[in-house]
Amino acid sequence: MTRSAASRPEIAGEAVLWARHLAVLRQALLMRKPDARHRIRSEAAKLEREIDSMSGRRNLALKAARHPDCMAGIGAAACAQLDEQIAQRMRQVGDLASLLRGPAAPCGTQDEGGTAEAASRPAAVDPVTMLQGKGKLSEDQVRAAREIAWVYEAIARAGRARVSRLCQIDRPAGWQEMPLPERAALIHAKRFRPWAEGLRRAAPATLDIVLQVVVLGISVYGVARAQRMSWNGCVTRLADGLDRYGRGTGKA
Image 1 (tube, rainbow, N blue to C red):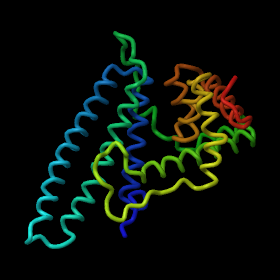
Image 2: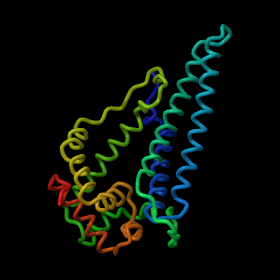
Image 3: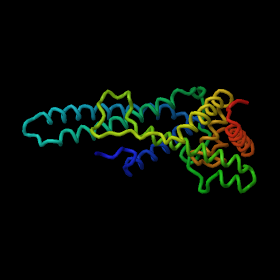
Image 4: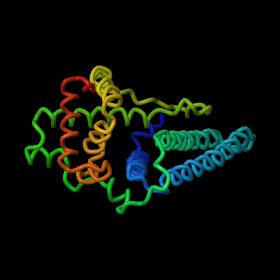
């Protein structure tokens, strides 16, 4: 039986790199870089070309597998590998499409210095730990931050292990989906999702700040700069978002 993609170090490593790359693209949109949306569209088009190419190779592999001279299992293994690669590219196209659903930057927007790569780079020191040391976050707020990060990562792992149902290709032989741990699933349903949905409606900027600092580990300075607010204002929004999570609500 083959191991799931999430359990293979090389696939897991690629997933981490992709998540960081998405953070850079998202930061470029927040910073209103003039070429941000064009860059995302270009990457999506490139991925779609790769999907077409892989689909063609898969068809050839299927034909070869039916040939009497083909060794048993070789064609199936090639198809399974291509299935996994196609599903991964399709998930990435979906990730890029979700970035483009946001509002476009105003016409004539100018590059305001700094790069999205630098702004989205994880801080050298965990920002939550740093803020707690400075007395800016209480123990309850830090506890909420750790739970948010843990649930978010559990969801991400389960999602990466699941073949996209948008794909019309059968799952590879031996495929097993990674279930969301029971406790994470319960917290996600009862606390995380209502908090995130409520905050997205009431204070989307606050939700974005919490996820960037707590989940992605981006420095408060980088997030504050992207949000065009002061460092103290960003910390206030972060603390408010964590307080709302502790209260079990995203509402004001």
